Length: 191
Image 1 (cartoon, one colour):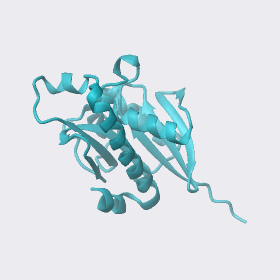
Image 2 (tube, rainbow, N blue to C red):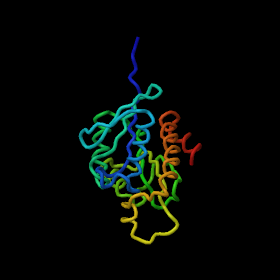
Image 3 (cartoon, helix red, strand yellow):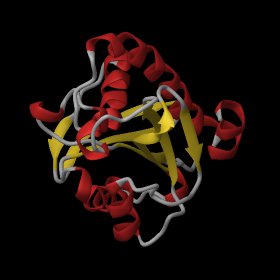
Image 4 (cartoon, rainbow, N blue to C red):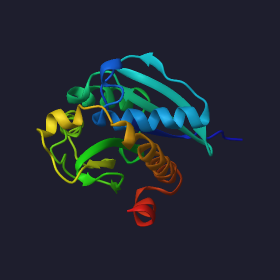
């Protein structure tokens, strides 16, 4: 009897490591992965170029990754773990904030540009392609009274937190749908 190893997925939440950035808007990717780890009771360990966790889900092996390379060098971590774990491109999902998408909205795409996001830009450079799935979470507000760079590195306001965490639960459903049903079906259901 032949044993088939489980299909592998690499789910990357973008952010910046360290206490200083923990509650910033730009750390949205880290926050979603932290919510998943609380919900399913697993933890991350510090490994080369990131914080990683393995999780078995419906006969699939999921690697959750929070790069420790800082946002602008996220591609180094993504490429390293993709090669190390031999994960194919269609099984990679990058989660990031999107300052141009209204707060709480999710947009899943199977390919595309960086939209000015430095983490996605670096991933495109290191991977040599824009053909990877990305899940963007909108952090836009109606107006900006400051530069976008300072806005994304600002902490979430207390009045935003409850709404934020209820929206993160939708993101978790999208992630597990991506793993189970693939990008196209998930896009049709959630976009």
